[in-house]
Length: 110
Image (cartoon, rainbow, N blue to C red; front, side, top):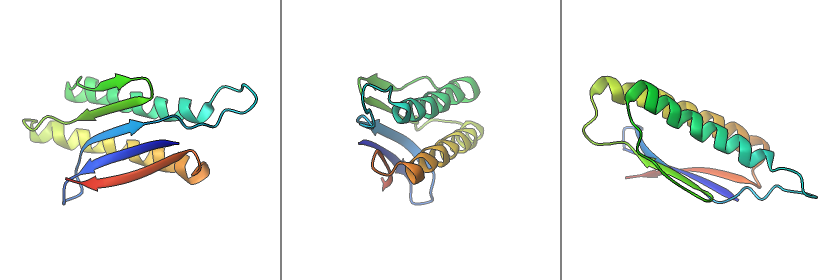
């Protein structure tokens, strides 16, 4: 199962995420489309953060993708990052609604 944990402030702002694990949806050698969808959403968010907020700091390894927003962001960059990250949550929650055995989205207040 893939677990996507979003780190949030008490006001609801997302300040980072950690996606880890494999969806485990392979059957009979089929390509794991759930993992592909999760990865596409994660990398699209990272691309948006890079292009629109000039943030390119993330950790990537086999079965893991994580990042934390820097604490010295401008207000404009933080607002843009929130739109990107909250859209990422929407996309992952949509996958979770269909494939809850393979992905779990949760929030951790920090």
